[in-house]
Length: 247
Image 1 (tube, rainbow, N blue to C red):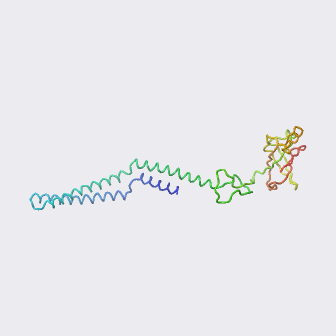
Image 2: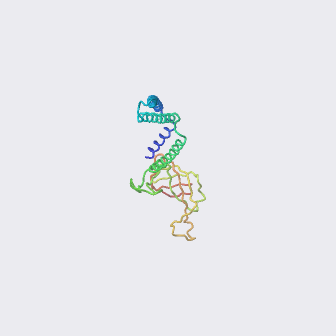
Image 3: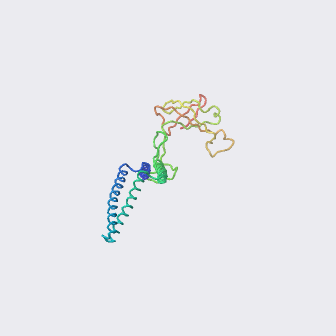
C-alpha cells in the first residue's frame, strides 16, 4: 500500500508539472470558438429585437429574452476563455509545492515500509549450519530476540585452555598444531587469549590452589577437509614443551 500511495503521489506531481495536455488545450480552444460563434448569433438577434422594440413592433418580453440570451452568452464566453488561459498557463506553483510535499511524505512512508519488510528477512553473517531453532515461523518477536543458533562453517576455531605456568609461553598469532584422536594434524594460530583467569574447579579459590588457574584460548584452525566437528575433543600443541587440551 505504501508503494501504491507513493506511485499515486508521483503521478499527481508529474501531472501538475507537465500542465494540460495538447488535447485538453485544443478542446478548450474549440469551446471558446463555439461559444464566440453562438454569442455572435445572439448579439445579432438582440440587435434586431432592440430595433423592433424601438419601433414598437415586438413585445417587451421578446426584448427581455433576447437581452438575457446575449448576457448569458457573454458569461459563457468569459468562462471558456478563463479555462483556456488556465490550460495554457499550467498548474499553479502552490499546487505543485503541495504535491511535492505530499510526495516526500509518501517516499518517507514507503522507505519505512521497506525497512520493516527487510527486518523480517533473517540473514546469516556467514555460511553455516543451523543448530537450534528458538521459535517457529509466524511467531511475533521482540527486537533482538534469538531466532536461530548458527554454527559457522568458517572460520573454524577451537576453544582450549592453558595453565598459568605456561601462560608466558603463548602469544596471539603463535602457530600451533591441532591434533585429533583420529590422528589428523591441522595447522592453527592463536587468535585470542582471555585476559581473565578461570579456576578449575571454579568453586575453589584458595591461595594454595592458584596453580589451578587456566586461561581460555581461541585457536583458528585451517580445516579445508572439514575434519573437525562441533564438540570434538582435540589436543592443541602450543610448543614442544607446552600442550593444552580443549574441544
